[in-house]
Length: 90
Image 1 (tube, rainbow, N blue to C red):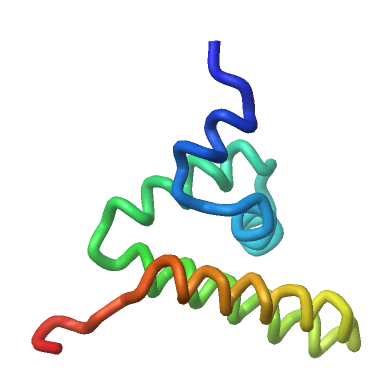
Image 2: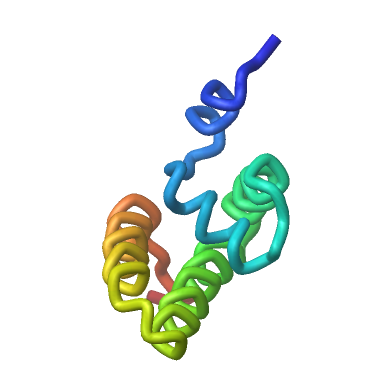
């Protein structure tokens, strides 16, 4: 049987990236893990996850939660470094 931690390791995402998806989509972490893994397997997935994290950053800033905003900016930086996205034709 796989544990949650095993699934995280297989997903290609970090716990923080999964939490950002869960927060954005208002779903439990395990559902966000499945969604994130699925998105990474699609052509539009990397930009979609990037937009999810950016939306979370904007929401945190709008609420005045600068600590959460800073945390999410680090999550975004790590995500982009691990999942570079190149537009078609580049």
